[in-house]
Image (cartoon, rainbow, N blue to C red; front, side, top):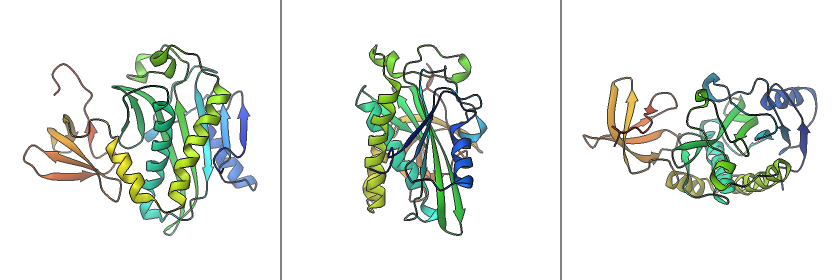
Length: 252
């Protein structure tokens, strides 16, 4: 077992990703080490967003990896593997769990988990990877700023032990990371695509050209989202080049 071989726990940190970065700079640390916190005072999400989390209620953790086997221009497969690992954990407790491209986990139409991956690159090699994970476990109420958020407790009515849950999640992540290390990238990408949120469904999107209707058809080798437009032309998009418009009464 690599991921979860060592778990370092704190009651509170500014950011588990930031603390992991400090450890990488200041000491030798084993691959798969997890930094876990009960609360983050400056937790970060994708594109500079914050991650809302009530103290002691959710999983807030970062995993340190050395994915030397993955070229920098194929780094999206790390997102693929870790997204599947989180989905495996949540799907063991609840139904209709999807991956909203590129790396959010959805239960129905609500967000239950997200990932912030920070890779240190050297040429076309990855020196190290810090994967921050926020997973809503026991929090029952979320502020409007959190968007449409939900927790496992909301879904099941159960209260989860956070320490036990971190260990179980680590096992799910480790299984997917071992697939990555052994070269099963095509298998991982195929399964990731099969679990995409709104896959094959007519949805509304927005890109630099404006709003349009389209259908998610999967991802390409660079991890770009493939969307078939109403004119049957399929375009591929990097993160932030396209937005999936949230479902509303007027949406398809």
